[in-house]
Length: 231
Image (cartoon, rainbow, N blue to C red; front, top):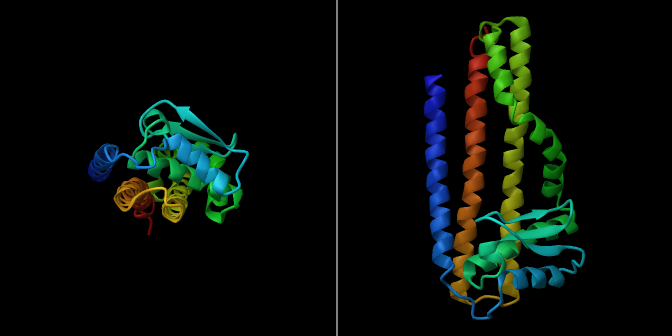
């Protein structure tokens, strides 16, 4: 178990560092005010309109960096620091979330696949660790039949969460690429504002990368605990 705690501690530290850097970047670029004077909400509405999307609403949501696109009710949810603000950070986030709306409208395959996994992962991710641990308690590491298969079931659940985290990567990177391409093509930002938006989105993407690597490392560790004891 000590090895697991060390692994989790290392992943948590890296995640905290990346998250802190992301917040620092967004704070820095929030001081780069847009010359076009548009708010995050206005930018989002224009990007949706430019892509012919008329059935998606742009709404404000509480919290910091709580921005997201909800495919169920077709809403682009922008945090308070993005919805009404007029800076490079707000432009980047608003366009990124609209990138997801464009993916949805165009049936982007990775987004479709991720959406199909959501119901499964939402149920299994929270219990996978307990199922694996329960299997080990029942003798999985020693190769005992019932405990082994219980632990394998837990690993499968954990594997689904890991798969989900890696499928999320192309979804997030593609949304950022769509956002930046639109900002540039429509001359929505100056060169300096574009660089700020690009840098902010890169750090946002790295949070998903760290999460995916952490999920894989956890799966690998517990896989060794379950399978390593068998001949």
